[in-house]
Image (cartoon, rainbow, N blue to C red):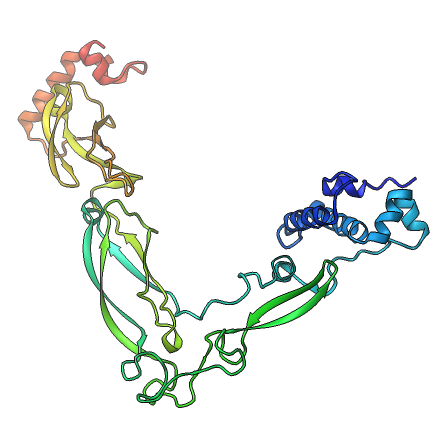
Amino acid sequence: MSSKQDYYELLGLPKSATADEIKKAYRRLARQHHPDVNPDDEAAEERFKELNEAYEVLGDQNKRQVYDMYGHDGLNGRGGAQDFGGFGDLGGFGDIFDVFFGGNARGGRRAEETGNDLRFDMELTLEDVASGLEKEISISRLGRCKPCNGSGAKPGTSVDTCGQCRGTGQVRRSQQTIIGSFSTVTVCPACGGRGRAVKDPCNECRGQGRARETVTVNIRIPAGVETGTSIRMRGEGDAGPQGAQSGDLYVVIHVKKHARFERRNNDLICEIPLSFVQATLGAEVEVPTISGTEKLEIPEGTQTGATFKLRSKGLPDINSGAKGDEYVVVRMITPTKLNDEQRRRLKEFGESLGEDAFHHHDKSFFEKLFGK
């Protein structure tokens, strides 16, 4: 007996399944395991072949009767399901959708040709990101031709209906497949799917319905954007040919590096200098924020590298508006210019602590100083 998997099990059906149930199960599983959907997946490719073989048999009333009576061996003995090489001339993924859905992979007809999308790269400061802004930008694009108002026809003349597709923008064709006969729809080659024909073209745009122009566009940048954020402006791209829909404009954000702050998501990080005296005795200092300054209390005995958090002093979230935090890292500044009196007093101070305070490895200088 053959060790092949039962065809009904392959399709997930009982032996009592109707022809319509078999067809639906096959379509669903074939879409799922088609090689174009699962590139470089040998298991999916093998399963696709098995499904194809199963449907070749169960979808044929005579072969199904033989299989129900004798199984795989009955088919082999009668020269049946030996070679099921796939979909024959059905081709790739787009063609399999032609079969399953009665049209091309985009839904039966190509939409009327639209204008190209455009890209504009905008550079912002971190302050811009914090507040958001409105800005005017100048772009060059293909706009609607003014003399013909985008129709492509010479002023005073009309645009005719395409004679080949009769204004539908599509032509039909029939195709025989292993599933049966299907009608598919393709874009009209004469008018490119527009359904219109220009017999007397506009002199300005030569029938294209568009011409080069430079325009000013106002754009609102929301607070919280980051490098790589893309803002879509519908209909602000190139105009489509002969009055077709315009493309979109995509404004891509680039945030400049800040001299003071480092950004991590919506949080900001900055460093501030502290003198030896401030770190040792504590102090109230002013620290920069993206919107001004804030007072920060530095406790006595603060070590270099210590970090303090200022809540909600970061950047706003682009979706919720909730602000991140600011993290302030302190760095102690060692004085480089001391007069003789300062050196003498500092030396006396060091001697009063004892030499061990500067060389003890299991306690820092400040821990020794404050007995911590």
